[in-house]
Image 1 (cartoon, rainbow, N blue to C red):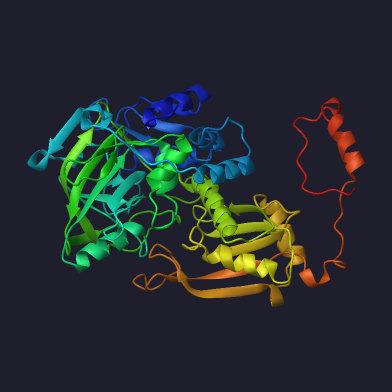
Image 2 (cartoon, rainbow, N blue to C red):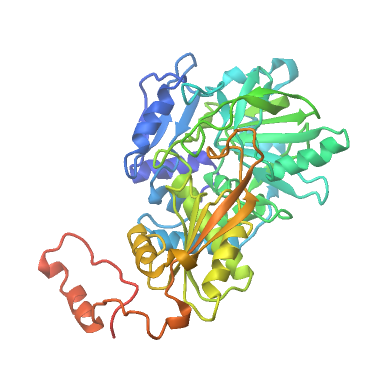
Length: 489
């Protein structure tokens, strides 16, 4: 059972996918540069920096939590190493249907409360916050983090993941894109002239990252979804300053207040697109009132970069795919055979591919439009491709083949305008432009009107296929036979 980050790391170590870096490394670009290089290695290890320049031993930083390792995603979901990508997406869908509320425990039993610092004693420089990129505006405490707020309307608790640049010993900036839940909570409070209580946590059970980074229905709590993944309620304690539920076994946590109008210049920051985000601009500030941390704390750090070095990409790909598939099911769309948000497409945000069995006129166009605008798929996504059920949406060679042989650009492309985007989109110029985007819908399915006369694809006969699979190893071939989605009967 995984209860916290340390349980998860122990199992990653057993998998042989944890590199504990004992040589001293600099927080100023060096740790992130190594993470960038290791991120280029398929299945490269998680990096636990044991010695950070200028910090006593025991104040550690963890990079490349997931990287391109399907095994570490499987571990987070409670699946076996080697689980296929499709099965991980299906498992994530099932886990998202099992919601368990958090379990409140007393502060004295919370691991994160081994050390508690308040008010003037607070110094956020205690933790080895990295500077990731040469042109970053400062050091970032929050990248792989939980940002915890309560909706002032219905009272549900929201978990988000937003970048947080250190401003002073007891202040951090927060950047959040328009439309994100915590920003909506803040705007409601500030419109009444009231401050927003917030809490942040770093170094948590990675199951919490899988939900905090996704779009969950705005009237539900991510804590419940994380509990569903774990099969029991996430243990939390009620913050003494804000009353917000904070993960009891986080490595580091803080509580603070965000006052209306309290903002200052933040950024730039190297973002998930592989570009620096919007130029330095005003961002709201957390006035930190309480800090909690474990002995020998581990700060979780997410490098935002081009693929595959962006730590979030493969994880986001699995969970965003599962969430979009679930949304399509909830909308009653029949015939869906698979969904895939490609990790190279800016962390899975930029492209969604759906395979379906066409059942009626307009089915493919309907699926494209809904996948583009459903809650889980609407943010940022620019390319939505729909393919037939004989095409694996996670195999880009097959997808490109379908686009090249089944899509007629003159009739099978549509554009949606004024859709939900972000200031972090490098195509939005000037950078101050409001974050409205657009989407291309690509119908790469066989023309439904002519399914009965559409050119037949070449397929291997099933009898021959079965015979070859049975003889595969005796033929001296180096791996298992590939899976095919279709064959000739």
